[in-house]
Image 1: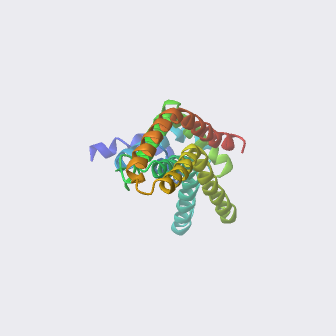
Image 2: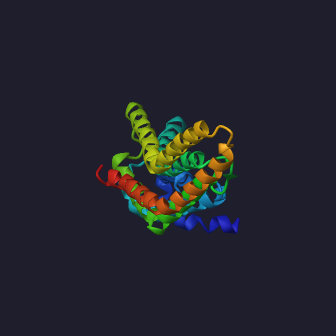
Image 3: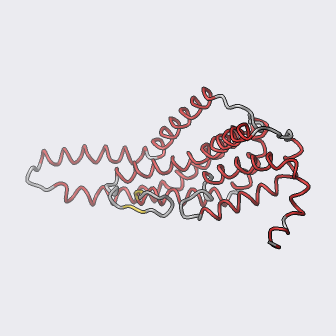
Amino acid sequence: MDFLLSFVGPIMPYADNLMAVAAMFVRLSVLAFLLPGLGEATIPVQVRLVVAFSITWLLVPVLLPTFPEITAEPGALAGLMLVEALNGFVLGFSFRIMIFVLQIAGTIIAQAMSLSQIFGNLLTEEPNPTVSVLLMTAGITLALTMDFHIEAIKVLIRSYEMFPLGAAVNTEDLAFWATQKAMGAFDFALSLSLPFVILNFIYNIMLGVVNRAMPQLMVSFVGLPAITGAGLMLLALCVAVMLTAWIAGFNAVFTDYWSG
């Protein structure tokens, strides 16, 4: 009980705005569950909630003066929390989809290299091809070393200008935005993995030619090690360029927010 009473002093100055602070925490907690690095399956839920609560408490003095005082019925408060959760999902999805780009690109590359049967589940609950895990780990590490988490907090603060507290969401615009983001993710993933798609195309043409010229040769015994070895060499040469292009696309997400 004494432990709980120790929180009374810091909380009492904001007693009239607890609902606004709670709504802010809901938006930030949903964002934290989708944010690359913090939202991975290997991070315990308790850690994510503690981080969301800590950041909320740090931002309360900055954002609370801009919030209206909320005095509504329980039903309206529940609607407010749902709207704030949706706003947090929109923010988090715009970042999380960039991780999906690496996941999709890694799956395409693994299929082209005949390595799609080798799985790993380091970052996600579902097993993914090892190439996907490699690219996602490298991408998340690169984003965090470039102070991505600080930029994400800036985006959260800016989000209250674009999505004011409790403002209704235009579902039609949201559906169009989400569709465009999904289409862009597949397009970006395919462009990152294009060298491997071309390599696989050339490999299959050569395999068909060799099979027609020497039907007695078991071309799969020769072809599979060849495509895997060539794919690994190409991956070693292209991974730096791929991640450079990906981080440029990641930075474009922040540019979209700053441009409104």
